[in-house]
Length: 341
Image (tube, rainbow, N blue to C red; front, top):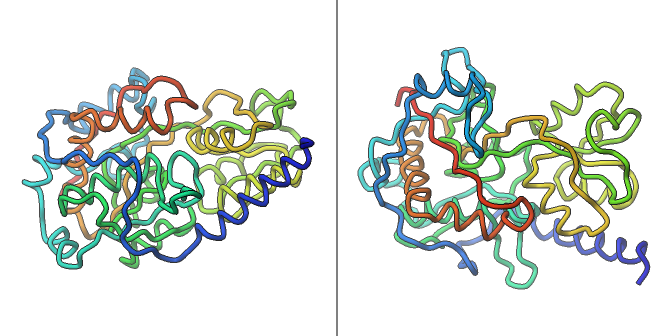
C-alpha cells in the first residue's frame, strides 16, 4: 500500500471513530483492562499552598509537577485545591450520597484522545489514563469502578456541562487555571503535561521558532489555542476536536498540530508519518473538573487521587497508557491545598 493510500485509510477510520465517539451519552458499561483496586487507603501526601508557592516560584519542582505556579486573585496558585482531610470514606458528603442514589457517576470524557480517553474499536469501551481516574472515583463511591455513565464532550464543552450540572465530574485533559476557577472547581493536579508540536516525519520543524508562515491546528476552547493565537507569524486553525485536527493534518490542510504532549503522543501512535518535536512551551496541570458548588465532591476526589498515588495505581496507569510514548513514569504531581472548603 502506498503512503498516500495508507493515510487515506487512516483518515477514514479516524473520522468514523470520531462520529461514533461524539454520542451524547452512554449507559454504564464495563471496560477491559481497567484499574479496579479498592480506593480508600490513607495517604500523607499533603502540602499547603503556603508551602508550595515558594518552591514553584523558585523553579525547583520535581518532574511531573508545575515548574511555576500561576497565582490567582486570592493569592493562591491555580493548582491549589481543597484539603481532603482524610480518605474518601471520611470525606463523603451529600453530593456523593445523591450520586449513589442515582446509581451511576456521570463523567464528561473524550472518546477520541488516544491514550487519555478514546473508544476501543474492538470492545466499544472508552479507555485511557483519564478514564482510569474516573473509574477510581466510581470505585470509591460504589465499590464498583464500572458504575459510570459517560458523556462524550468536546474541549469547549467542559466548563458548560459542569456549570449546568449535566455531569458530576470531567476527566478530559482539563488544564487548571485561574480563569476556570471563576466558573468551576478543580481537584488537585493529577497529571502534568506540556504543550509541544506534531509535524510530518520529514519536516525540518524543530520548535515554535520554525513555524513562521505555517498553519497550525488546535482544538477550540483550549488553553492551547489561546497560546497558539499569540504566536507571531503563525496561522492558527481552530477545530472542534483533537481528531479533527489530525484529519486536517493528514489531509494537508494544516502543517502542524500543537497540543499537550499526552494528546500528541496518541497522534504519533496512530500516524507513523508524524512525529512530536520541540521542548514543552507551557505547563499544563490536569485536574478533575467539578461543579463550583460541590466542594464536598472536591474533597472526596482529592482523597481518591491521594489513594491512587499511594497505592501505586497512578504509576500503573501511567506505565500502561503513556509509558511507551513518553518514557518512564515521572513523580506523580504533589497535591497543593489551601482553598477554603
